[in-house]
Length: 409
Image 1 (cartoon, rainbow, N blue to C red):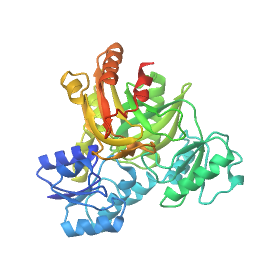
Image 2: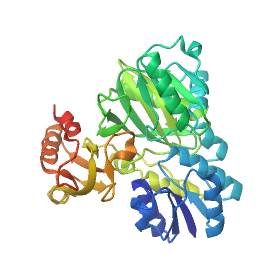
Image 3: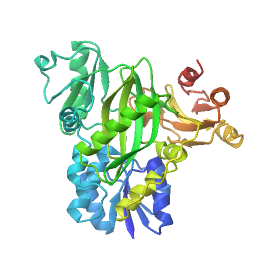
Image 4: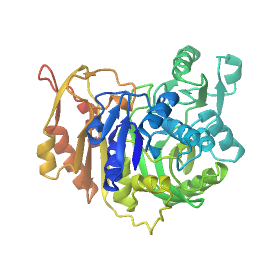
């Protein structure tokens, strides 16, 4: 068998490894010729994963048996559309892929089904009269963005107009969501829907770069430190979403805000979390979401066994840099061998220019720290912060240590 894999990031590397274990040939499509997953593919093509015609022609040319990706919501639509047009198997149909990726449709369904979410409007051209009922600060985002691209927080009409134009330019469907900002801790909920019933796999807390109008994640914390009351509410809301969008068998990711016993949904998608989240899910729930997507695509329905949670503390640090040209990492192999970190991965190649942080795509590397107690976690984190460097062409450490410092304060 032959699979066309869309995107070549960390989750797709795991996907290709699992496919190869099944004896399946992997054809990789990605616009980045230096994408980290290229060396894991049997064949690589420089094709935009958002180009429906390009993906379709590649699938026909290579005579693939199926098209697959994980952890990518906008790519999900391309996978589903091309699969449907070519009669190839896919775990999600095209119509559902649109519904779970289009933020305008999503917000409307939330309101119609009493799923808590912030007040909002959808506009394709700016009209100040349409936002009179909204209260600042506001969040502006394209209806079809990913990795926080084009998402901005604004505090007045001047900032709003500028952010609206930027978001409209990014949006492929030329529509923008403007919604009220909700205070609280941001949570990401990874779940799996089996025969229409939702099962919560992992709830983690997100830290986003402070002092910025953008919403870029730099740390994932597990456990999230939520009460049993909030957990129950999250599960009830996740089931409401499952029912409203008629989801049957699929991974699911929900992003929301919790504050004072409430949980407000920001957005969701029929996929698992990006980055290294698939590993975190497996560690805390025992469920392999990557293999589940493969099984579903091949016509098998994975059964979710009894989930066993442990008390382990786990954080994923996503590393960003100050201005400079990336040369190499230092200290990572040493702390890995000493079991200070459990894993790390370099995401950028030598010669990459670093500077303004616009989205999660600007991460240079990530690392994971695991501990049996919070005190051990703090101690390991201090060692990591003191010993790792991201070195530029001038021999200077350009790592944003200030983001690491925030965990220890």
